[in-house]
Length: 283
Length: 283
Image 1 (tube, rainbow over the protein chains, first blue to last red):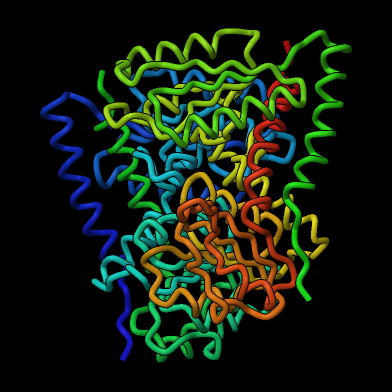
Image 2 (cartoon, each protein chain N blue to C red; image 1 turned 180 degrees about the vertical axis):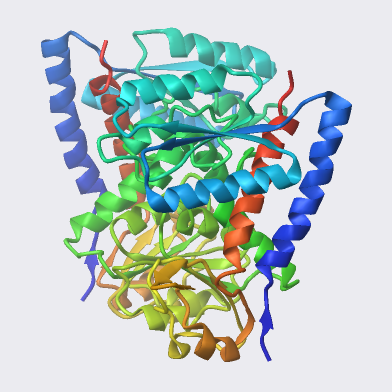
C-alpha cells in the first residue's frame, strides 16, 4: 500500500518554522528580511507564480517587492537595475522571474545577481559550489524541496538506485547532485534516452521532471519505488503531473500528488533561502 | 576484436596543433603564453607531475615557471601569492599543484585563482558554468581528455548508456556532465554503490576513475563497450589502471591502455587550456 508524500503539509510546517525564525531575526537583529522579484513583461503564468511568492512571503513575515518592468527594457538597463538591487543593503534576496522576453539574454542577466542574494541558487558560482560539494548558501529551490520530500519518508538513500528524468538546470541537474551527495547511485535520463522505461524500471527513487503529462506509465516503475513527480502540466482546467498517478501509485511505496507535492515545497525553499541570505549576512 | 585508443598518439597530435597556435600567437600578437605552477612542499609524486608539465610546456613553446614554496607557508601568504599571480598580466595560466600540506585549506586557496586563469578548470564559477551548459573557458583537463579519447573512436554518444565509476571533482563529476551534454544517459557510481558490477554491465561507455588497481573485472563489462581507464595505480615498479586490462580488453570494442591512455591527454588539455587563456584575453 502506497503512502502519499504530503508536500502541502510539509511545506506548511516549514513555513511555520521559517516564520518563527523571521520574527526572531526581526527582534534580535532588527533586520526585516526582504525579497525583490523582478518581473519583466506580462507573461500570464509568471504573474500567477509571482503572486504566489508574494503571498508566501507575507505569510511568514518576509517583505516582498515586485518590480514590474516593461518588456521593452534594454538588457543593459535591466542589468543596471539588478546591480542597484545588489548594492541595496535592505534587500536580501533577488529573484528574476523567468522566462525573460526573447530579446534579453537570460544568462547575461542572471549572472549579474550577486551570489550572496541569489535565492534561486542558479548563479554559476553557487551551482559550481553545489557540484563540488563546497559550502553553498543557496540550493535551487525545487531540487532542495524534492530532497526534503524524500527525506520525509525516512528511507535511507545510501546505495539506492535513483533515476532523474530531465536534465534542466533548475531541477534535473541539481537534484542529481543532491542525490549523489546522499550516496545514491544516480542516473540522469532525458529526451534522447533510448528506452526510458528500461532505465526508470531500475529506480528505487524516481524523480520525474520532464514537463509532459503522464509520461511515466505503470509499466515503467519498479515495485516499491519512491516517486517524486515534479511535473505541473495544464490539461484544460486540470493540473497533472509527469506521472500517470492513478495507475502508478499502486506500485509505489511513496508518491507525491500533483498538485500538493513538489509545488508548495519550491516556494517554501525560496522563503528558506531568503532567510538564509539574511542569516549569513555578516554586516 | 578490440581496438586500443592510443592516448599517447592523440595527445602528441594535439600538442603539435597547440605548438603551431602558440607560434602564431607569438608572431601575430607578440604574446608569450605562460603558465605558473605553484608547488607547496615536497610531495614526491607532485614533483614528478610538475616536471612532466614543465616538459610539455617547453615542447609546445609555452613558458612555464614553477614556484616552489616551503610547506611552512601560512594560508594567508599563499593566498597573497595567488593574488599577485592573478594581477600579473604576463601570466596566463595558474595551477596550484595538489595535494596541499594539511594545514592549508585547499578550497580557500583554489577559489582565489582568477577564473580567467584557472587552467585546471576547478574554480566553482567555471565548474558551475560547465554544469549549466554556459560558455566556460576551461574544462577540467582529465575530463576534457577523456572526451577527446571517446570522440576519437567515432562512436556516436547520443542515447548511449554511459557509466562513470568515481565521483571526484577532478574527473568523475565533470566527465558525467560532458557525457550528458553529448546526450548519453549517464549513471554515476561510487564506493557506496550496492552492486557495482550490476551497474557497469549496462555501460556501453564505461569510465573507470576510482584509483583502485583492476577493480573492473571481466564479468563487470558489457560486450562491445568503450572502456576508458583513468586509474594510475602504482604496484611496485608497475603502473596499472582501474581495469583488469588483460582480461577485459577482449570484451571491449575500444579500450585505453595504462600508461599511454588518459595520462598524456590530461597534460595536453592543460596546454590547450593555457592557450585558451591567452586566446580569450581581450586586452
